[in-house]
Structure formats: C-alpha cells, structure tokens
Amino acid sequence: MPIRKASRLAGCLLLTGWLLVSAAPAKADPSSDFAKAVFDAANAARLQNGLFPLAPDARLAATSRAHSQVMVSNFLQEHQIPPELAPGDRFTAAGYRWNYWRENLAEWPITSSAADLVQTWLTADATHRDNVLATNVWDMGIGVVIGPADAQHPDSLVFWVTQDMGREGDANFNVHLGKFQISSPQLTVNAAANTPATGTFTITNVGDSFSRLVGVVSLDNTGDFTLSPAGYNLKPGQSQLVTVTFLAKRSATGHATVSSNDPAHATASVSLTGNVKVAAPAVHVNPASVTISTPQGTPATSTFTVANAGDAGTTLTGSVSVSGSGFSVDPNTANFSLGANQGQAITIRFDGAQSSNGTATVTSNDPALGSLSVSLKGTAVGGPSKKARIKVAPGSLSFNKSPQTLTFQIRNTGDAGSTLTGSVAVSGGGYSIDPASFSLATGQSQTVRVTFQKPAAGNAPFNGTATVTSNDASKGTLFVGLTARPSVSIAQVKVTPLRLNFRASASNPQTRTFRVSNVGSAGSVLSVNVQVVGNGFSVAPATVNLNVIPGHPQVVKITYQPPAGVLSSSGTATVASNDPNRSTVTVHLNGVKK
Image (cartoon, rainbow, N blue to C red; front, side):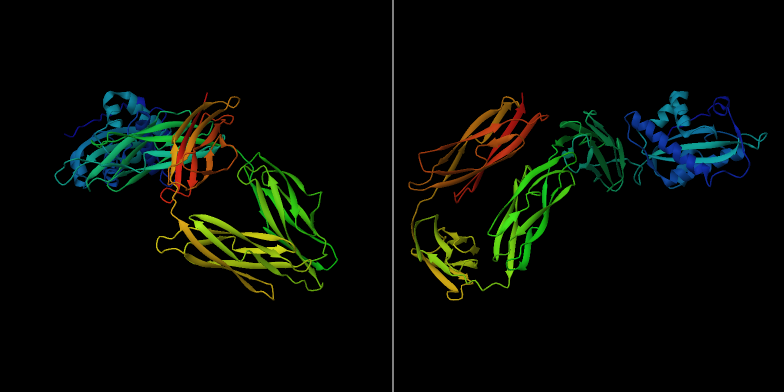
C-alpha cells in the first residue's frame, strides 16, 4: 500500500539564515543544480548505510517539481494541496505504475547545502529517515523550485523541495525481481610495487522486461583493495561495471561480496587476487643487424643501440662480444650500465680486409632475455672475387628406428674470404630437416640434422632426398639419399608425482623431486625436455634433457627459494617428450614461504 511518509519540517529549524537575493538568479538554473545535489546526497546516504542506490526517473522528477511549484504558489508545505491530486494519483497521472511510493518535503535555505538537507531528513524523525533509507522503492525524482517562504517576505527566497520515490510494477502493478548474472567469479590484478592498478567485473540484469535488479557490493580486505561503485540499480538488460583497485602494497587476496534481490542469487562472491610484479630490467637492441660497406683494406665502423626498456628504478648491466673475421667491438662501448629508458651506442669495427659475416652477442642481466644477437655483415668493395665451394658428406643416410635423427655436414672449401650460402629441403614421407639454410665462411661447416618419424601410412623402406642448393657455381645442387627401415619401438612417458608442495625461505631453500619413466616398448628411447616456470622455482641445470629407456627412470630435482617479499608462489614443470600419445605432462608446483 502507498504511504504518506512526509510532514512539514519546522520553518524555525530549517529556514534560519534566509538569504535576501534579487529576482535575477546568480546561476543559469540553481534549482536544477540543487535537485541533482539532493539526489546525489540521498544516494550517498543510502550507500553509507549499506543500501542500493535509487535510479533517476524522469516521470517522478516531473511530478515532484510540479508539486514544489504548487507549494510555492500557496506558500504551503503539504503532500496534497487541493485541487491538486494526491501523491499516488499524481504518480499514476505521470505514467508511473507504482506498487509502492514515498515522499519527503522541505523548505530549505538557499545558503544551506543539499547534504545538510538530507542529513536533516535522516535525523529529524523516523518517518523522514525511513523514506530516505527505504528498501521497498527503486526510483527517485527530486523537484526543486525557488520561491518566497511566505507572502510577507517576497524577497526572502528558499528552496521548495519534493523528494518522490517509487517502485514500479507491470501492467497489473505486480513487482518483478531481477535476475542476477556476473561476468566472472574471479579477478586478478597485476601491478608494480606501490603502483595501484585496476580490474573490473560486470553485474547484469538478465530478468524480464519489468524486472529490477538491485544490490550492494562490499570487500573483506579493505587494506589491499578498494572498489567502486558500492551499489547498483539495474533495469532489464542493463549492466554495472564494478572497478576494483589493487593498492599493490604487497601481494594479496580477498573477496568482493555482491548481494542482490534475486531470490536465486541473494549473494555472490568474486575472488580477488593482487600480484605485485617484481621490477626487472629489460634489454632492447636496435637495429637487429649491422651492415658495413667499405673499400677493401679501409677500416670502417657502425653502431647499434642497447637500451633498458625495463621497469623504473632498475639497472641493466652487461657487455658486448663479437665473432666473425675482421670484426671487433670498441672497448670503450663494450660494457654498459643503464637506468630505465637509458640507451648506449655500441661501436662495431670492420677491418675491410675481406668480406665477412659475424655476430655481436649482447649479454645482460635481463632475467627474460639473458643474451641477444645482432647479425654483422661486412663488405670489402673492390677486392678480387672469392669463390665458395661446397662439400657435403656423407652422401646418404640410413635410418633403422623411429624416431631417429642422423646428420650430414656442409663445408665451405672455397677461397679465403668466400662465403658459402644456400638452403636445404627434404622430400619423402616422415622426414624433416634442421636448419633449412646456411651461411659459411671459408673452412666453416654446418651440421644438418635429418629426423625420421614413421608416417601413419605406408610400409618400409621409406625413401627420401635432402636437396642442398648453394652459390657454388660448379655444384649448385647436391643430393643426400635417405632410406628408413624402422623397427616398431614406441616410447611412453609416465611422471610421478604430478604435484610438488614446498615450504622454504630465501636462506633455507627446499628441493623436491619427481620421476620420469619410460613405460613404452622394449628398445624405445624416451627423449625428455623439462622446463620450469614460476617465481622462485628452478631446476638444475636450467634446461633438463633426458634419454630414458624402459626400466631405468630418471629423477628431476626442483628447488624453491622464495624471492624477498614473496609469500607464496605457483608454477609448473613442463615435461615434453617424444611420446606420440602424450607429448607434454605438467607437474604443478606450489611454494609457501616459511
């Protein structure tokens, strides 16, 4: 049933300190500004009291302003001033199908704030307070008209305020509660230390066309997270984006609890994880290749830049070394120590004696990229032609198992200063090669690996060809014959256990193990590579390569040493193998600082 939850607030209480003003307003529309301020202050009070906000409704705003105008015209503060309609009938006439309504009224000094008015409603009496903090209304309209307090003081202007609130139903005035949906039950925010970062989740009303979804959002860990907004009011199809700020004082977890009026989802929880990223330097090289062209016998130089593209406060340190005939690095630029966003030019010298290729290797303390390579090309212009000559051995390869890798060599036996370049291609089912190209100075060799993996169809022998094409003018193309007669021998991986739990400190690391077994057929060889990822986890050496035969399992040792400030870590040890049915197995790693 509708209620009349308003009475005139005493003029002696609310109208002290009237302001005498001229008829011309100081602002374009101070009444609209004050109405918005009252609306915002009322919703702020609701959120402070753990209640959902009310939604603005143009129909309620229009009828509340019309009622304020009637009160000004009659110098009277009442809910109905004949021949005006009663509040519920006013709502109906405005097209609002109310199921419940409430109304507050006030005359208010122009010199006082909207926040003070709402606070007065909250403290004046229980009726006004209950109206502001009602849970059985969804919408609100504020109507404000500026006018004299009474006929005897036409220049003593006050705000005449009407606050109308309602809950709308369907065509039969029945209320439809919303249907709750949340975008994700988990939210992870990563941030640099003491640099707040944000993440979001979304609340949506997926209910019917008459429904309304309302509720509040709260945190259980306000020391590490904040959120906004703390409440929501959603019509059908509307969504509310909730922004969670991770303060990044330390890595932390928490929960955002979302309440709603959906009977099926009275509360929902969003798990919050905040990760503090450890600052680290990051190496960047530009350009990735250097070309120096100079008359033969005339030295020349060129440069590339090494920069620290890492986090603020970090220092990138390292050195540059070179390989390749005729190349050297200027010792004055061979070492570097760079703050964040700083760079240094590295000077490369080419002696010009003869054309040559080389590599500049940049080694640094970048934890992700310990070293980078810059390709070097030096051209001595005007010298005699240097002829490259190719030699390939052996001329054929025979495979007797699957998988199996065999090799052949490509060598440059040409003139001093020549460069042999070319490519390698393979044909025939089951064959692959690595690498597919080469560039060799005089006397240099390249090992080419040919791998045979028995194809699903076909019978032995499996024949193929490795075709070597080069710039040797006399032997442009050579061939290596490939033949495979594999016996059936299949490796099968087994890893135990699949989870390792650690409890350690920086000064007292802990090492645990897991076992890799080959449970495949006799004669098979299980080729295994182990890679570890996770903050504080390591494997010795950094990359583990194993060959496991049946009946002889291998043990892998994982060490956990938590970095400073890290309370817990998780990671994985990925076991990659040649098991045709299970190429990778993951061992989950969990570390806790003790």
